[in-house]
Length: 256
Image 1: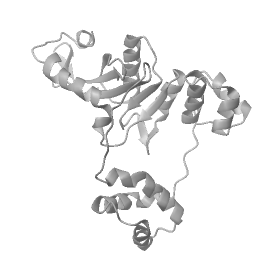
Image 2: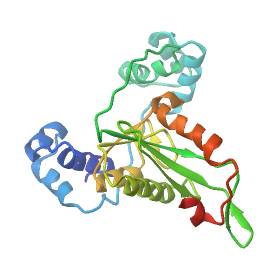
Image 3: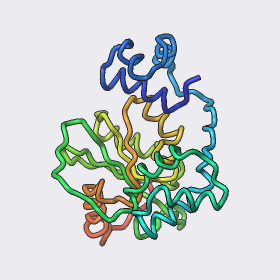
Image 4: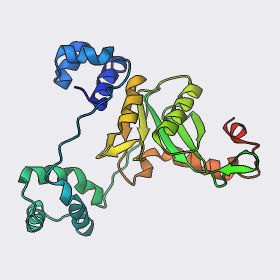
């Protein structure tokens, strides 16, 4: 049975990339009937087989600690240290994981000018207002704004939400997309808890949302605000231009 992420990816290949079923079969390795069933589904699969635990999982915190102290520590030496703690996995498991995570601990980065095509990419983020939002009868609630900015046109949209749980964030994203009246190819998020399931993978809720649209997704590396710097500039505008000297009657007034 297909999981939510794979279902959404097949939908994206068909609806966004306009690939044929034959090409989707070739790229994914699934048989033709599986691909057809995925495309006929109106919603994401309800069940997902849990991922098999890796022998490396209990030792990842120790790997990160060692890399933070010395990003260039050789894999052979690191394996010796882990074996002293009980690791009995293969050399390949450790080497593959080190190739993935070692760059996160190395102090190096290159830059180049980024150019987007129209409709290619939409960045999302969360911004928290300084004051709580009035909700009537003298009551206030802590709120957040789901912010969105198109990479090519720099068009902006935002939606007020009162929780960082998936249903609220998905509502905020839907409202932003409605304001744009268009669907980009890729939705970009950082590692927000309701969006990111771990290891750069989407949660079922987020993958299901993208599959239903359909659209692709991109989850950024941890602690990397420069990857969505356009939105960081808009958040500064919200703090310095939108909030000061404004008062709101209630949450509907704020939303409007």
